Image (cartoon, one colour):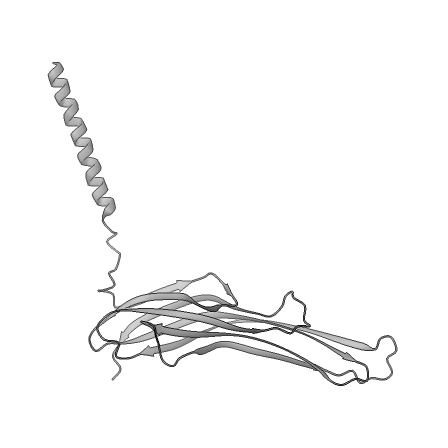
Length: 210
C-alpha cells in the first residue's frame, strides 16, 4: 500500500509539472492578432501627450517593408497650438513703440535617416506685432500708456511626405518636430509665448508612383 501511494503521488507531481509547462508555452506564444512587419500593408501610429516647445525630437516612428520597386507615402497629422504675448508701452508725445512675439511648429520626416520630400513643412506659424503711439497732449493723469495683448489658437493640419526608390526591405520612418519661440522680453512670463504639438497620427503606405 505504501508503494502504491508513492506511485500515485509521483504521477500527480508529473501531471502538475506537465500542465505548468504547457501553460508556460501558451504564455510565450504571441497573440494571434499581432502583425509582422514583413506582412503588413500599411502602418499606423499615434500619440496624445502634448509637447511644449518641441526641439527637434522624434515624436512618432514606424517600420514599413517595401518591394523592389516600392516608394513610401507618409501622411502626418497633428494638432498645433500657439501662444503669443506682447506688451507695448508708449510715452505721451513720444515716438511709436513696437513689440513682437513669434511662435511656430515645423515638421520633418526621415526615411532611414534621409529626409523625405518636400523637406521641412510649417504646420503653424504666427508673428504678433503691436505698435502703439500716445499722441494725446490733453491727458494729465499719466504720461504713458501700456497695451498687453495675448492670443492663443489651436488647429489641426495634415501633410503628405514622399520618398521614392527606397528599395526592397524594411525601412524606418521617423517624424521630428521642432519649434520657433521668440518672446517679447517686456511681456509677462505668464501666460507667455509658447508652441505646442498636440494629438498626432502617422500613416505609412507603400506607393508605386507611375
